[in-house]
Image (cartoon, chains in turn brown, red):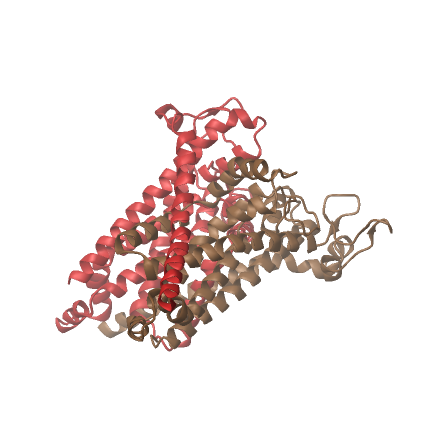
Length: 311
Length: 302
């Protein structure tokens, strides 16, 4: 009787693990379900034109001024090229990573290798506090304050642009990169440092020549996870990037990212229309991107643990 | 000479990394300072308890605070028990080499990385349309009741998003309970489930609390998931039913800063609203950090 009860409880708890798996599965299924008819439904095929029109160059515009990639879903001839959105996402993410990666890694090295205990106890909660910033607050700050500062400082033509959104996005990913890197550096066994110092290396030679290389897979995982977060972040870019779907490489121009497009357009779209399906398709792409990125991050972390003899 | 060079490099690198670390603190101070400086004056009881007036250029934010509170309370009711059970599976029952453990662990990791906006799409596709319409057909004879954006669906969507937060926190707490407690319980004839639910879990309670608080703080700050599943621009009445729409602090900030007809008139109000949201999340995070710190210290002591 008692054994039966125990077995039932164990089964019940195991079911919750199945529940967690099911949730991730359902997320993909229910987002992809709305997107999939894009590729066989007659209305969608006519209006959107399948993969080819989503990704490849088209003959819009005039021969003198061709517009091969246009996102213009509300128009007499709706155009659904995803390229401006992909490019916009990459531009903003690039700015964010350029700002966040060096700063996060330097700060992590300082915290784990140089900082006295008292200062470490100040920096770590500080970064945790920054991580707790709601993204809508960072978006607000970039929109109202940072945009004006940057425009005045560099004399930019557009107030809202990829640089502005990218810097704010950098603030959102910085805590992730910092935390994962700092964990990786702290996980390097103390004997590595002692051996290096005993051989006459300076603290900096130890930090950069011994500890950092040992922790490198972990730091890499931090960068990858930060990248994943940056690609999917919505509110900051929606508020701070200007949201113009321009196909250009210039950083000081307004951009529109994939998540921001979904957030801005879905509420005004007819249920089940081709436009609706394209927005869910963007959602499916974002899901798959981040799934791949997170899996890579996990594998790297596991590799680091094995390398340091922890697992 | 070589020694000087080495020490010079040492100092430069120490200094450079230090600058990066303190720059983060500086930015943090700047953000908090700017928002507090511009938002403090309007932070009055009238503002917290009033409703928006004059096209949202005057009045208060009570409906948004109320909606946020309802959302996170409902969300916690869903996410905390489920998160605790998954954490118990991970920490106490799972065979770490087994495939179920590995796949479910990876699922939770991946769930934490899914973009917030994708949760919004999922909430709309699964909860609002699939579940909502099913409920309407089964219970309300097809009348549109739950097949639309609603508080309930927003809370469920948010609970899916915050699930990894709860799991990680509770699992850490369960792992920190000394093995000797479990052994003592077994030696007194306790079964595995009795040991877990009467000995281990009570000692991990601070972790459950921390997980719940962190989830609430995260849920109160996320806007993208609820854009299409229940948050409303402006409502004259407070929500009283699970299928009502609601106003929410973060969404209110988004609306005030992007859709205001008169940006300059809204700005002071906007700063104070941001200050309230930020204050709320910081307070929650601070409480969670203190509880976690005490728990770690206490368990280290035993």
